[in-house]
Structures are given as C-alpha cells and as structure tokens.
Length: 165
Image (cartoon, rainbow, N blue to C red; front, side):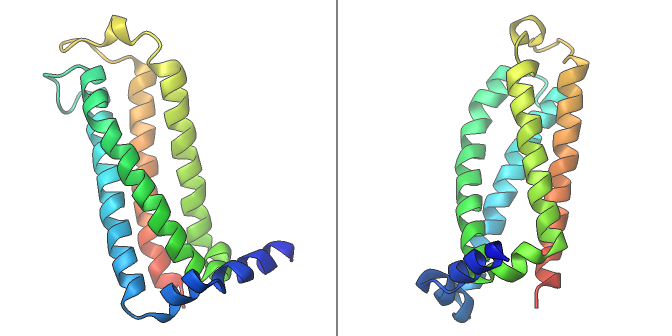
C-alpha cells in the first residue's frame, strides 16, 4: 500500500527515530501533549459551559470567547505539534490503530462543529448575548456536542497508549 510506504519513510526520519529510540524523549513529548490537551479541553469547556448556561453567567459569551479562545488555539498548536511528533515515531502502527483513527474522526467532527458554530451560531450573537439572556438552542446544542466530542477525543487518546505495542 502506497500510504504505508510514506508512513514507513516518516517513521524512519532522523527526528522520528530519535523520538522512538530515546527512552526519555517520547515521555517528555507525551507529557507536553497531555498538558496541551488539558488546556484545549479546559478552555473549550469554559466556552461550552457558558453557552449551556452552567458557568460564567456574569459574562457575555463574546467576552468569554474573546478571553479564552486565544489560549485554546495556542494550546491546540502545541498539542498538534507534539501529537505529530509522537505519531511520527511509529507512524505505521498509529495509522492502523482503531482508537487513533477514531480520535482523528472525533477531532474532525469537533472542528466541523466549531466551524459551523462560528459560521452560523454567532451570526445573531448581539441579539442573544446578554448576561441574563438565554443562549439559542442551536448554540447550546453545538456546545453539548462539543463537550461530548472532546470527552471522546480524550478517552480515545488515553486508550491509544494501551493498544500500541
């Protein structure tokens, strides 16, 4: 299979080999990855819980998003970078791991959900975004879906380490 040849090439690069063969490097990268994911999920949860009406009710949704989303993107960049480094160390096995594949699907769905929310959900935000206002059903639904998808990403990510040999 052509993709397996490309993955084999990737995992045989100098950087990937160093990560895979060094008994200290992979755990450090993994630790940074986990901390970044905690920040991603934590900051996304702050926004989602505000949209659902469970937290930060003394702030508007716009304010919460403005204050939190830059940290989300920064943490996501770190998580994507460190995740890519870990993937490269054993690319063929990761690519064929069902939990890893599921995690990528959930990440794509989370991105699609976020994209739709920012494209459609915030269109009338000036009308509904008040400290005492009720968030529209579509925005609450997007927030609930987001939380569920990110819980799934974390659960599958956690399981990956137990299925790689």
